[in-house]
Image 1 (cartoon, helix red, strand yellow):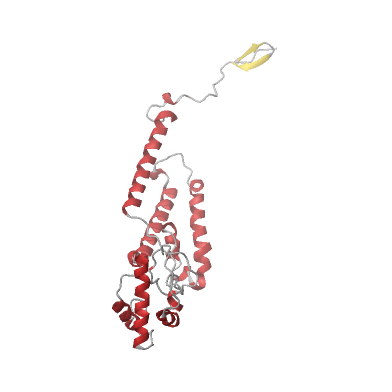
Image 2 (image 1 turned 90 degrees about the horizontal axis):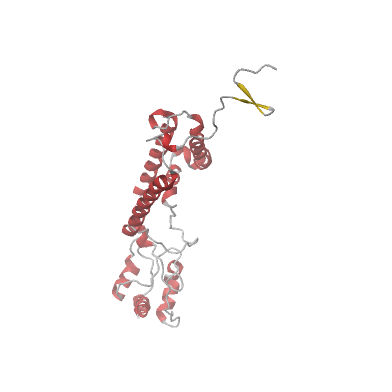
Length: 259
């Protein structure tokens, strides 16, 4: 048998004389283009993560998220808002062709197309380059998504008075105050105010709690007649004596709460 070019006998097998290695080259053979995972790359990841974590914690401490009261499905005047990372979708539903009769487009179709396009971006632009200028399709899609998200979030958040919203719906701390139902002012309160502020002055369906307020009896009486905020004037239609009993009752409950 003739020996083929580039072949040699090794026992009874034939292998190529110029066999190339399948072992990948060491990272040191590519100076400036790659590095060791440990500790070089991992240290950079830890440093980047630490900077982000410290920045995030600083933001939380300097601008704490306002806590609100417990959710109450009977409160008709409360307008719920999603968390900040869903505000852009909430704002999207305010547009003509993404809400109302076209709400299905805003809830399913438009977000589905947007996230589907981002999912397909690596497959649509799979060139060998890693620089943004070398991957125009993926870069354009990511920039468009980022700009749209930031703009919609800003547009939604700028229309909300966050301080007034938090002030109007404060968490109600546990109260050990016992309501004296035998007080003549409680009967007046039950007939005139309980439907909005709750039987125990804390779980109002349409009005804020009346536990923890700082007003005097005279100020409470004035508010009962003239109204304040979302409370219109003329809600109370009792006599002057009943008004005085009501104001004294609410004031006494809050004085007891301070103790």
